[in-house]
Image (cartoon, rainbow, N blue to C red; front, side, top):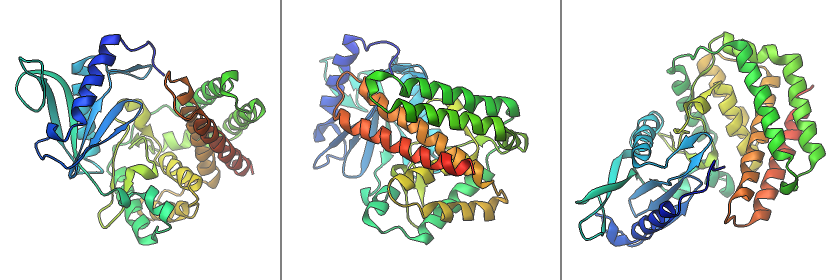
Amino acid sequence: MPTQAPRPEDDANLAAKVAYLRLPSAYPEKPKAVVAKETHMSWVFLTDAHAYKLKKPVCYPFLDFRTIEARRTNCEREIRLNRSLAPDVYLGTVTLNVDSRGELHLGGPGRVVDWLVKMRRLPDGCTLEHAIAAGTVRQEDIRRLAARLAAFYRGAAPILVDPEEYRCRFERDVRDIRNELARPAFGLKPDLVEQLAADQLSFLAAHGGILENRARSGRIVESHGDLRPEHVYLGHDPVVLDCLEFNRDFRILDPVDELAYLAMECDRLGAAFIEAWVLDVYRDQTGDAPPRALVDFYKCFRAYLRAKIAIWHLKEPDVRSPAKWRDRATQYLRLAREYSARAAK
């Protein structure tokens, strides 16, 4: 969550920019309508053919977007990184300018007051999340996706990570997550939170060598970082959007960790069968056959982490539907309990 409150002038400037970008007249293609969607760190504006992403001037422990230059740098990084798994989607940056009369223009004359990422808009009904909800997931589509991901991981240079430090990183993260989830204000079950932390730490103490071997054998690479069904677009040439561009450390992962994350989210949506399809292709194309206990540990850790991210919504000053986020966090904790039990066998 923010390390400091937004400055009043940032809020006012952002509100004016969002109001302008909601207008169909702001865009050169003159769309019939504009759909605006807000996330933690951005506003996304959907026109008929394109999507425009405006970064918020926010500051978190892991990023600082308070300056125009920082937002420009992040936009450029987002485009560069995402072209690996979505080569034809990320079109470039667009400036937001203010003219001498104080009027805003998208890519027009005047002083640059912000930067946006411009993307080709993809059909909403093509995401893996939508296919799961509609019951239309096809094995051939998942196999194409898994093959695309396997090629991406094969092409990534191994990142040298000290094996012991790799294991210790999980130990630190588990303790940090436990401390957050245990805050009384969140209203989560403290016994469950504590037991899950104890289970993961016990696994790392007894079987940490499995994780160390992943680092020792060169399996750690720069990955996508946020591989969720809503970011996956299926089809003959599947693409994956919205990599975690703002912090490289969050992208330095074991591919099996990343695929376990995707499988966990598919489990949550009621499509547990997807894991086997993905991992089968990954094994065939990379020759990497991770132990079952490792997959379950990674799934447990990812569910535990997502519980923290979900419950953090309650820290927002204008949080909407707090019950929704408490229920979501509880859902992740229950999944983590299932994975923990399997990893311990």
